[in-house]
Length: 322
Image 1 (tube, rainbow, N blue to C red):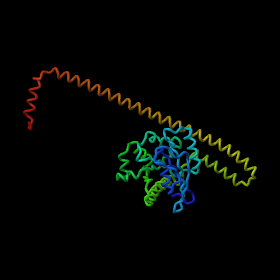
Image 2 (image 1 turned 30 degrees about the vertical axis):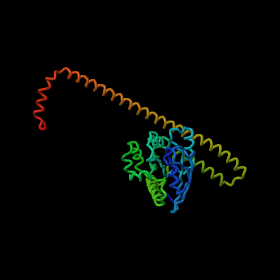
Image 3 (image 1 turned 45 degrees about the horizontal axis):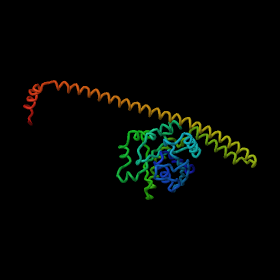
Image 4 (image 1 turned 90 degrees about the vertical axis):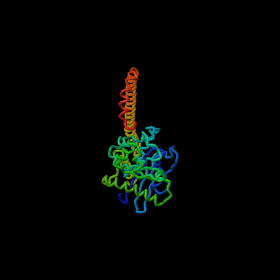
């Protein structure tokens, strides 16, 4: 388990309408993020909130807009990703991929893991926990999460498998303090497994390290004993360098996103082409079968009826129920 001094940082990712903000509120134990039951976006930008649990453990929870919605443009997406990294500059202990049992698993969601790998590298998979919302609906149908997954699409089953079967279920509508605490405990159990399997190290990469460096330089200036005039000059230089670095980071993210989008579009095109080929083959096979059937029918129509009588009598004589 992460030490009591350092907070455990979690980020919520997922499509608009899957319940990211409501899940964040369940983890925090209070209504910190705006949430809605509608499928329209409520979270406009990345936001960090913190809670200290009864055992002294601190949690940083970052809510995000629907970063992988099909309507989101690349410019907005790249800026929000850089902002999210800035909020989590010391690294991420867990990435919660929020899906809903109430919503259909979409084509875009199947590409989420590939997009994350393109942005942050393959190691990001080691930090992902799949958080399903809609636990109240499964309870109404007396269905467990495992039963739901067994009946789900192969694509969803494969996504959970890629995350090493790390999954939790949230009922964000419950009023029961016991249920709320149990859900958070189950999540933290999965997060602690992630932390242990990664040697206690949070996820970082070059983008996170750049954010850490910016933060360190700010602290150096604040504690350097400079005069007000010197501080102003240094801060201006720092802000200029910061802006340039943010621009560079945003451009890097944009380039990686373009690669991810192109890969996804190529895959969709290949799948569409393969589906068209299968449909064409099926039509050709049906046409061939119909041609053969017509030939058989024509051949039979030329055979005199009397030729069928002897074989038919032979069959009838030997049939025990006739």
